[in-house]
Length: 250
Ligand code: ADP
Ligand code: MG
Ligand code: MG
Image 1 (cartoon, rainbow, N blue to C red):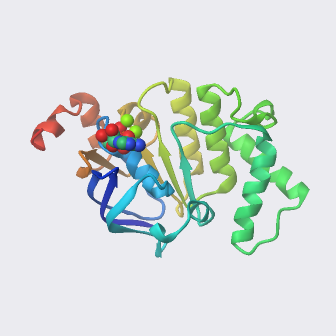
Image 2 (cartoon, rainbow, N blue to C red):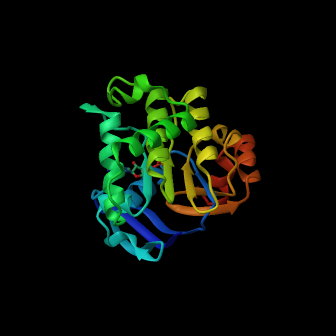
């Protein structure tokens, strides 16, 4: 699904990621944890193709294709979904219309005709029920005036509608209340299939009380310094990140 090899990334000439290696297979949920400033959001941004970040070395392939050669919008159409810490608001565009455009663009990319109005409504109905989002939200402008929890719900709804092959969810280090955590976790759990994969990026172990990852990685100072099963998240909850810092000479 996703293969990252020896990835080095700089911002303004400062190296942030210092040789990341990561392999994600279909059906797997990977958690990437680590202290503040480790480079977690940088990794998510590079996967999204934000141009602030300069890849100085290494490669990323997604389903056998060179991801770094693809424009951000093509990455989405190829099946990568990126949920962000700070979702954008789009005044004047309802979530319904936004999703209709997005879903049909994805279909066009695959050589499929746009959904008929009735098929689109059925898809909306099914996914709304799945992620338990209210029509009051989907009829409003995208994220405009949404609370933190509502933005999360909308993000998960968008993910459900687009049925990505790989979802990358970068969860903020603060300000996510327990309801928002549950929304994200329920979404990830319900949308999990044997074919799709998820990367959950989080500072806190708490999210992983609800999502059971197959693999947990610790990112520290631009490198993955530990990889293990879900028990690693529990160990981090108990011991914090200081032992990781000590083991890595900081
Ligand atoms: P994390 O998500 O793990 O907290 P980030 O990827 O946000 O870490 O940041 C990693 C490092 O890169 C930090 O030292 C941060 O200050 C730096 N950094 C991130 N974004 C920028 C930016 N836009 N300009 C300059 N430095 C940045
Ligand atoms: Mg941070
Ligand atoms: Mg971050």
